[in-house]
Amino acid sequence: MSDHPTRVHSGVVSPVTGLPAPARTMRSEWRRLGAFVKRPRLPANQIDRGSLLVLARIFALDVMAMLLLIVAATLAVAAGIYIPETALSGIEFTPTVILLVLVAAPVMEELLFRGWLSGKPGHMLALALLLAGAAGFAFVHLSNPGLGLGLTIAGLVGAVLALVLLRKRPPMPWFAAFFPLFYWGSAIAFALVHILNFSDGSLLILLPLVLPQFILGLLCGYVRVQIGLWANIVLHFAHNAFALGLAALSMLAGA
Image (tube, rainbow, N blue to C red; front, side, top):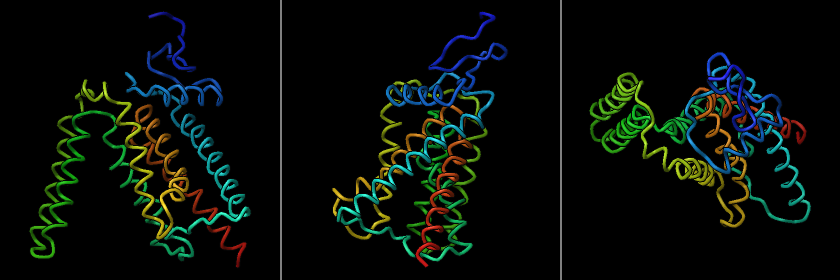
């Protein structure tokens, strides 16, 4: 390998480790993200240094997108366009609600929608076992609570074993080949699920309202494969915290 770093999507390769390093500027980081979104692919290696810097830059872009969408929604309401309220509108911010929004939702949703996006056998098998355990619990816990709990625990234990025993297995070749479909599909599915947050409204009205979740899905998918699972969970947490803060300020202003 050369003693000098080489360009990789507006970023560099570390001359010390040979692994991807953060881009030199925020604009370059966003260009790297744009190139990835246009042509998604599993990276050969994850960023080894400066991952928090990358995460901060991607979060800054997420905040900009949220603010622009809020301005667009405000203008739409001023123009007389009906925008249905979410199921969370007017809800009291109790400690339980805050815990669900800031901790439970980021962890569970990222595991479900992007934990497997690495394409590694251990991650995909772990998700399958967790879903199987949850499905078993849902179907039998009313008639046999003990069996339901046992299936849940079995799924959890199996998922942990899959992660441990298969941790060194590389991404599956077929997954890497179809990665763009999985990347875009996970973001679309993540956005569509959030339509359930609205109790009324036509699909034509609701689809633009889940643009924040679609954008978040693209960003979280990017940091998932570029940095790691912890990074997309942190990004999701930061997104929800910012949105929750804006909602709290809105309620205080209207009080």
